[in-house]
Image (cartoon, rainbow, N blue to C red; front, side):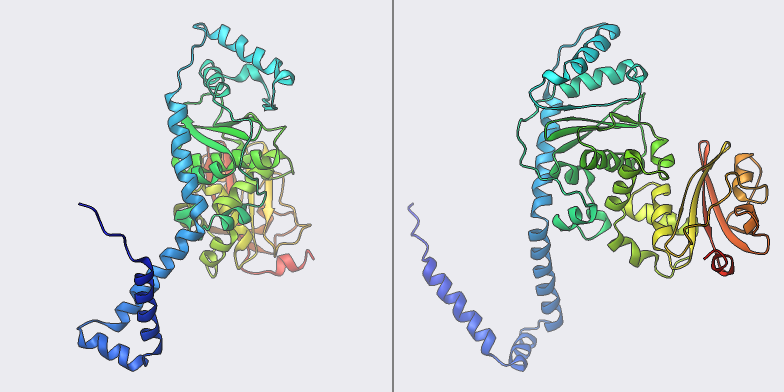
Length: 393
């Protein structure tokens, strides 16, 4: 049976007539007609609003949706590959060394760096070779946006549950894969304008997301001198002195905990670990990065301090904390952090003497809330009474 051609012009004319009729009809008449048909005008208005909002959201996120499809295809292509490697681990390690030694002769720049190549386990050597053998494309249509906030805006991301790290990385030319890693928590191998980010599949989902965003930070800022592998301590300890690891951590925090989403959620909230844990749950991020963002955007003056048994690793003060206020290299026995380092029972949060953290501050108090991660203690400090801070200005 042959279908009759659709009269497109006729349909358009009919739709235009209907639109004109609705536009010229009085509001009361339209509402009355709807009620006569047993319909709720408010429900109709809500449905229309939701339909428009959904269409606008889909348009804003068209790049993100395309990236999700591209990521699925890239993962499938990587999984389908078969690669013949030497049987002996020593031979594989020699092959990896040979590949790196030939870097200047590669058609496109191979971006790799590692503190100690010998620190790679045999399994890590194997997966690195597999990634180096990936079907790299010589040219990429992906453009690099260095601002995490601009990247999110460009992709139409407005809510925490929309921060799809795999799709976001794919828009930057980096494909994220998950494999067992024993020598590091994450690594990146780049070739030209494409990269493969490998995340340890044994880590928690929150740490995997932060690790992936951290490596994407390397890809964004340090292409050409990228850290080949990052150990898990990097994501906790590297927040102090400015270096590539700190920049990557900052990028990850800004990507996974963007200021325009975090600020409304911490406004008027207490500066305690409970608030930070709620942020971590909502944004599916590590507690350390959530503590950092809480300190930066809290209504009250606050500081985050990272210590080990050997002393202070880094600290970060909020915008209302004087820049010349430095915590002790080693907190005193009056601090919660001291108890955690020495495996003593303690309660947290609690009010402690400010002198536990700052020399010559015995007249003041502050609230300390600390937690221990492996050998590191992260302490969240905030001041109810700002007299201590005013004396530092």
